[in-house]
Image 1 (cartoon, rainbow, N blue to C red):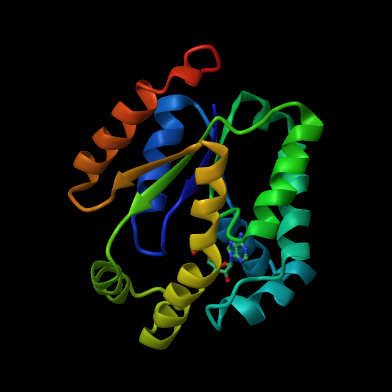
Image 2 (tube, protein in one colour; image 1 turned 180 degrees about the horizontal axis):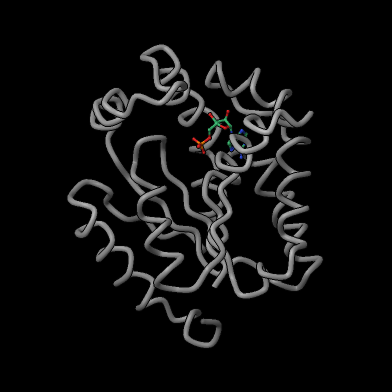
Length: 191
Ligand code: AMP
C-alpha cells in the first residue's frame, strides 16, 4: 500500500503513523524526520533547511524533492510506504505524481487526519520541542492552512482522499483509520 498521510502539526500523525507502518508493514517516510536528521548531522541540506524550519516556514521544494526522490529509490520502498509530512504543497504533490508514475507505482490512498485548530494549539504548546514556541506554532498552522489545505482539494479531485476525525484517544483514532483502510477495496490486491 502506498499512502499519503496529511494533517496539521499536532494532529497526532506521527503517533498514528508509527502504528500504521507496523500494522501494514510500510516504510515510514517523514520529511520532517529526514530534515531533522540532516540538521543534526550538519549536512549542507540540513543547514539550509534549518533556516526555514526554525521560522516555521516550509523548506523550498527543490530541497524536499531531492531528499524524497533519493529515499524512494531505495529498495525497501517497494513494499509500500506511508508519506508523513510530504507532500505539503500542490507543486510537491504534482512532483510526487510524476515520480510515482515514472515508477509505475501510483498512490493508493490519501488519508487526512482532521483536528480543530484550538485543539492543535493546545496540544502543540504542551509538547516542548524547539520549534514549538507559540509564535512558531502559529506560523506552522498558518503554513498548513495556506499551503497544505489546497492539497485536500487536489486529492479530492483524484478520488484518493479519505478523511478521519483525529479527536479522541490514540486508540480510538487508530481504530477509525484501520477500519477505513481495511474497508478500502483497492487495498486487498495490493497489501
Ligand atoms: P514536520 O515534522 O513534518 O512538522 O516538519 C517540520 C518542519 O520541517 C516543517 O515546519 C518544515 O519547515 C519542514 N518540512 C517538513 N516536511 C516538509 C515539506 N514536505 N515541505 C516543506 N517543508 C517541510
